[in-house]
Image 1 (tube, rainbow, N blue to C red):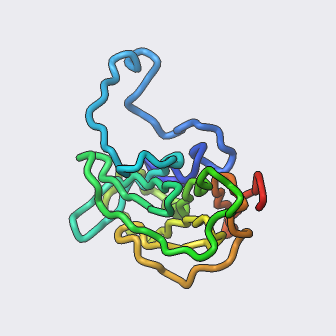
Image 2: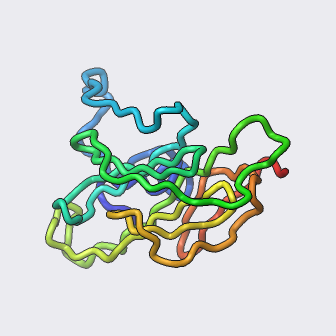
Length: 189
């Protein structure tokens, strides 16, 4: 089960419903009052960006954070502090053979996916901030077809990258269900 503000993959959940079932503040009555509170330019080259994923509660070396994760077509992964609209960390993934030489356009990296949180213990609520939560890795697919398992608070590798799809295969957004990562490819070299 996802915790309060988690948006685990493009589409929100494994059904890609685009529905935040745990939303308690935004309603059809007050949605018209929403305002832009910050915006952030992530890459100077205006490269293609993936859909964001959100980890609603993470204890970091800078306190409790809600972090947004986005990847771009240059194999950069960005972590943004959702409350402050500031870059929390950025990681460039080194790739080999990451694109099709015959292609004029860059190959968009699939949107990352987050590991769901464990079910809440009996009697606990989503607002219980003292409930312990295990590390929930971030999965990112680079354009060379390697799947990276990253620490959500630092961007560091939690395991060696693994070959997942062919290089330059233009994968769709990642989907993590149970303990399996899925994607499909659109175009090959």
